[in-house]
Image 1 (cartoon, rainbow, N blue to C red):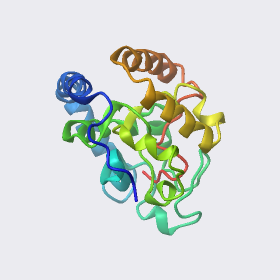
Image 2 (image 1 turned 135 degrees about the vertical axis):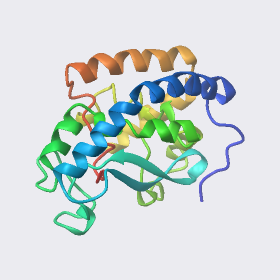
Image 3 (image 1 turned 90 degrees about the vertical axis):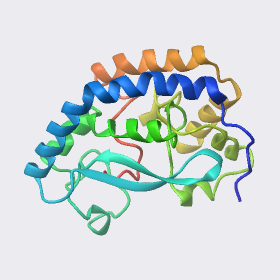
Image 4 (image 1 turned 30 degrees about the horizontal axis):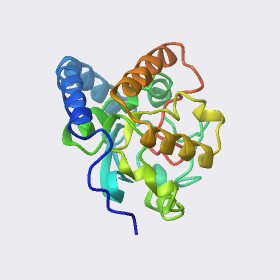
Length: 207
Protein backbone atom coordinates (compact mmCIF):
# COMPACT_ATOMS: atom_id res chain seq x y z
CA UNK A 1 0.00 0.00 0.00
CA UNK A 2 1.07 3.60 -0.56
CA UNK A 3 2.04 5.69 2.45
CA UNK A 4 -0.40 8.29 3.70
CA UNK A 5 1.10 11.76 3.45
CA UNK A 6 -0.46 14.48 5.66
CA UNK A 7 -0.06 17.31 3.14
CA UNK A 8 0.92 17.51 -0.52
CA UNK A 9 4.24 19.07 -1.41
CA UNK A 10 3.86 22.86 -1.59
CA UNK A 11 0.60 22.89 0.34
CA UNK A 12 -1.70 25.88 -0.10
CA UNK A 13 0.95 28.06 -1.71
CA UNK A 14 1.46 25.66 -4.62
CA UNK A 15 -2.27 25.09 -4.99
CA UNK A 16 -2.92 28.85 -5.05
CA UNK A 17 -0.36 29.36 -7.82
CA UNK A 18 -1.93 26.51 -9.79
CA UNK A 19 -5.35 28.16 -9.65
CA UNK A 20 -4.08 31.68 -10.33
CA UNK A 21 -2.31 30.46 -13.48
CA UNK A 22 -4.82 27.84 -14.65
CA UNK A 23 -8.15 29.67 -14.46
CA UNK A 24 -7.29 32.57 -16.82
CA UNK A 25 -5.42 30.25 -19.20
CA UNK A 26 -8.45 27.94 -19.45
CA UNK A 27 -10.69 30.92 -20.19
CA UNK A 28 -8.33 32.21 -22.89
CA UNK A 29 -7.88 28.77 -24.45
CA UNK A 30 -11.56 27.79 -24.45
CA UNK A 31 -11.95 28.64 -28.18
CA UNK A 32 -8.79 26.64 -28.95
CA UNK A 33 -10.25 23.62 -27.11
CA UNK A 34 -13.39 23.83 -29.25
CA UNK A 35 -11.47 24.07 -32.53
CA UNK A 36 -9.15 21.18 -31.68
CA UNK A 37 -12.09 19.02 -30.57
CA UNK A 38 -13.92 19.67 -33.87
CA UNK A 39 -10.80 18.88 -35.90
CA UNK A 40 -10.25 15.59 -34.03
CA UNK A 41 -13.85 14.49 -34.65
CA UNK A 42 -13.44 15.28 -38.35
CA UNK A 43 -10.02 13.63 -38.59
CA UNK A 44 -11.02 10.19 -37.28
CA UNK A 45 -13.88 8.25 -35.75
CA UNK A 46 -14.24 8.51 -31.98
CA UNK A 47 -14.47 11.06 -29.17
CA UNK A 48 -12.38 14.23 -29.10
CA UNK A 49 -11.13 13.58 -25.58
CA UNK A 50 -9.34 10.59 -24.11
CA UNK A 51 -9.37 9.62 -20.44
CA UNK A 52 -7.07 7.18 -18.68
CA UNK A 53 -6.85 6.12 -15.04
CA UNK A 54 -3.62 7.25 -13.40
CA UNK A 55 -2.15 7.32 -9.90
CA UNK A 56 -1.62 10.66 -8.22
CA UNK A 57 -1.16 12.23 -4.82
CA UNK A 58 -0.94 9.75 -1.94
CA UNK A 59 -1.49 6.86 -4.37
CA UNK A 60 -5.04 7.92 -5.23
CA UNK A 61 -6.38 7.14 -8.69
CA UNK A 62 -7.92 9.76 -10.97
CA UNK A 63 -8.86 10.13 -14.63
CA UNK A 64 -6.39 12.17 -16.64
CA UNK A 65 -7.73 14.11 -19.64
CA UNK A 66 -6.11 14.50 -23.05
CA UNK A 67 -7.12 15.22 -26.60
CA UNK A 68 -7.37 11.90 -28.42
CA UNK A 69 -4.38 11.40 -30.72
CA UNK A 70 -4.78 7.71 -31.58
CA UNK A 71 -7.51 5.71 -33.27
CA UNK A 72 -10.48 4.93 -31.06
CA UNK A 73 -9.92 1.72 -29.08
CA UNK A 74 -6.13 1.81 -29.58
CA UNK A 75 -5.53 -0.13 -26.33
CA UNK A 76 -7.07 -3.20 -28.00
CA UNK A 77 -5.00 -2.92 -31.18
CA UNK A 78 -1.36 -3.72 -31.92
CA UNK A 79 1.02 -3.11 -29.00
CA UNK A 80 -1.79 -2.55 -26.51
CA UNK A 81 -0.79 -0.13 -23.75
CA UNK A 82 2.62 0.67 -25.25
CA UNK A 83 3.41 3.03 -28.09
CA UNK A 84 6.18 5.12 -29.59
CA UNK A 85 6.46 8.12 -31.86
CA UNK A 86 6.05 6.00 -35.01
CA UNK A 87 3.02 4.03 -33.83
CA UNK A 88 0.64 3.43 -36.74
CA UNK A 89 -2.35 3.93 -34.41
CA UNK A 90 -1.52 7.64 -34.07
CA UNK A 91 -3.80 9.67 -36.33
CA UNK A 92 -2.40 12.27 -38.76
CA UNK A 93 -3.81 15.12 -36.68
CA UNK A 94 -2.77 13.32 -33.49
CA UNK A 95 0.85 13.30 -34.62
CA UNK A 96 0.77 17.08 -35.05
CA UNK A 97 -0.93 17.60 -31.70
CA UNK A 98 1.71 15.46 -29.98
CA UNK A 99 4.56 17.26 -31.72
CA UNK A 100 3.28 20.56 -30.33
CA UNK A 101 2.18 19.00 -26.98
CA UNK A 102 -1.30 20.41 -27.61
CA UNK A 103 -2.77 17.04 -26.66
CA UNK A 104 -1.78 17.82 -23.05
CA UNK A 105 -3.90 20.99 -22.78
CA UNK A 106 -6.97 19.26 -21.24
CA UNK A 107 -4.82 18.37 -18.23
CA UNK A 108 -5.36 21.97 -17.17
CA UNK A 109 -8.84 20.74 -16.20
CA UNK A 110 -7.17 18.12 -13.97
CA UNK A 111 -5.21 20.97 -12.35
CA UNK A 112 -8.42 22.92 -11.81
CA UNK A 113 -10.03 19.88 -10.14
CA UNK A 114 -7.00 19.44 -7.87
CA UNK A 115 -5.93 16.05 -9.25
CA UNK A 116 -2.81 17.53 -10.79
CA UNK A 117 -0.48 20.51 -10.49
CA UNK A 118 1.19 22.51 -13.24
CA UNK A 119 4.55 21.21 -12.02
CA UNK A 120 5.19 17.78 -10.52
CA UNK A 121 6.06 14.16 -11.32
CA UNK A 122 4.17 12.81 -14.32
CA UNK A 123 1.10 10.69 -13.46
CA UNK A 124 1.67 6.98 -13.88
CA UNK A 125 -0.15 3.64 -13.88
CA UNK A 126 -1.09 1.53 -10.86
CA UNK A 127 1.02 -1.35 -12.19
CA UNK A 128 4.12 0.83 -12.13
CA UNK A 129 3.42 2.24 -8.66
CA UNK A 130 3.10 -1.28 -7.26
CA UNK A 131 6.75 -1.86 -8.21
CA UNK A 132 8.00 1.20 -6.31
CA UNK A 133 10.44 0.79 -3.44
CA UNK A 134 9.68 2.68 -0.19
CA UNK A 135 12.12 5.40 -1.35
CA UNK A 136 10.42 5.69 -4.74
CA UNK A 137 6.97 5.96 -3.12
CA UNK A 138 8.00 9.35 -1.77
CA UNK A 139 7.28 10.51 -5.32
CA UNK A 140 3.59 10.27 -4.37
CA UNK A 141 3.92 13.15 -1.90
CA UNK A 142 3.38 15.57 -4.78
CA UNK A 143 0.40 16.04 -7.06
CA UNK A 144 1.38 14.85 -10.55
CA UNK A 145 2.23 17.64 -12.94
CA UNK A 146 1.79 18.64 -16.57
CA UNK A 147 5.51 19.34 -16.63
CA UNK A 148 8.23 18.44 -14.17
CA UNK A 149 11.91 18.33 -13.33
CA UNK A 150 12.40 14.98 -15.08
CA UNK A 151 10.79 16.32 -18.25
CA UNK A 152 13.30 19.16 -18.55
CA UNK A 153 16.24 16.94 -17.57
CA UNK A 154 16.38 14.68 -20.60
CA UNK A 155 13.18 12.69 -20.19
CA UNK A 156 13.41 10.84 -23.51
CA UNK A 157 16.95 9.65 -22.80
CA UNK A 158 16.55 8.68 -19.13
CA UNK A 159 15.57 5.22 -17.84
CA UNK A 160 12.39 5.11 -15.77
CA UNK A 161 14.31 4.48 -12.53
CA UNK A 162 16.38 7.64 -13.07
CA UNK A 163 13.29 9.73 -13.71
CA UNK A 164 11.92 8.59 -10.35
CA UNK A 165 15.17 9.63 -8.65
CA UNK A 166 14.77 13.10 -10.18
CA UNK A 167 11.13 13.25 -9.09
CA UNK A 168 12.04 12.33 -5.50
CA UNK A 169 14.72 15.03 -5.59
CA UNK A 170 12.02 17.50 -6.68
CA UNK A 171 9.78 16.41 -3.79
CA UNK A 172 12.61 16.80 -1.26
CA UNK A 173 13.72 20.20 -2.60
CA UNK A 174 10.45 21.81 -3.65
CA UNK A 175 10.08 25.57 -3.67
CA UNK A 176 7.95 28.04 -5.62
CA UNK A 177 11.14 29.30 -7.20
CA UNK A 178 11.93 25.79 -8.46
CA UNK A 179 8.42 25.47 -9.92
CA UNK A 180 8.76 28.74 -11.80
CA UNK A 181 12.21 27.73 -13.07
CA UNK A 182 10.76 24.47 -14.41
CA UNK A 183 7.91 26.33 -16.13
CA UNK A 184 10.38 28.81 -17.62
CA UNK A 185 12.54 25.99 -18.98
CA UNK A 186 9.54 24.06 -20.32
CA UNK A 187 8.27 26.85 -22.55
CA UNK A 188 11.38 27.22 -24.76
CA UNK A 189 11.75 23.41 -24.87
CA UNK A 190 8.25 23.15 -26.33
CA UNK A 191 8.81 25.99 -28.80
CA UNK A 192 11.94 24.38 -30.22
CA UNK A 193 10.49 20.84 -29.96
CA UNK A 194 13.31 19.87 -27.63
CA UNK A 195 13.71 16.10 -27.11
CA UNK A 196 13.79 16.66 -23.36
CA UNK A 197 10.08 17.35 -23.51
CA UNK A 198 8.33 15.21 -26.12
CA UNK A 199 4.56 15.05 -26.45
CA UNK A 200 2.65 12.42 -24.53
CA UNK A 201 2.42 11.39 -20.89
CA UNK A 202 4.89 8.51 -21.11
CA UNK A 203 5.46 5.12 -22.74
CA UNK A 204 1.98 3.90 -21.89
CA UNK A 205 0.15 7.00 -23.07
CA UNK A 206 -2.70 6.05 -25.38
CA UNK A 207 -4.33 9.43 -25.82
